[in-house]
Each structure stands twice: as structure tokens, then as C-alpha cells.
Length: 109
Image (cartoon, rainbow, N blue to C red; front, side, top):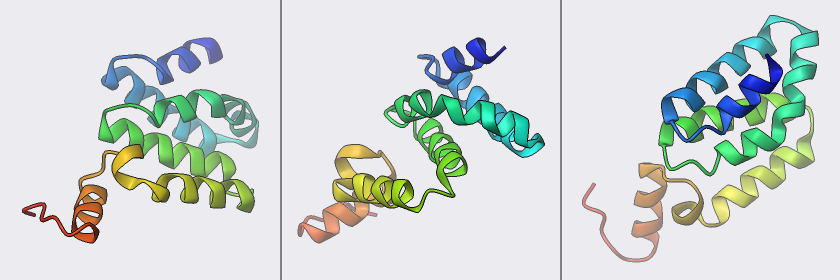
């Protein structure tokens, strides 16, 4: 089952990817044994962060934090990486609004 979930996390269909990410979050919360298995999927979770779908990005961010929450350096690097170029890395509407307002352009929001 581990192999199927790993493939589902990076699936091209955002519905499949989103379902796999949410299932992985629930597995983490179920038991410590499950959490140790999910921790091995960090590569797939990082791939899901590159998805064009905002919901997949959000759920991948949640799972990534859940996996790395005890590693302060990893969380710090993650935040720095995705706040350096908000408009380029994550497709959050709030990120676009902030980047447009700081550059002098109006986003109309």
C-alpha cells in the first residue's frame, strides 16, 4: 500500500494527489508506526509542492510540516525558500497580492 500512496501523491490528477496527501496526514495521526512510514515520503511531498493546484500545495505544505515539525532547521529553510519568491514558488492569491503591492502594481483585490 505504501507504494500506491507514494505514486498517488505525485499523480497528475489533483483529486488523486489531494486524497493521498490527506490520507497521509491521517496516517501520521493514527500511530507512531504509521508516522515513521510517512516520513519516508518527504521526496514525494516536495514534488507535490510544485503542483499547479493550490489545494494540493496547501495539503503538501501541511504534510511537510507534520513530517519536519521537530526539525527547526528544515522548517526554517522551507519557510525561507517559499517566501523568497512568493509569486514564483506558490500560487496562493494572497502571495500574489503581496508581491504586486510591494512592486507598486495594483492587483485589483
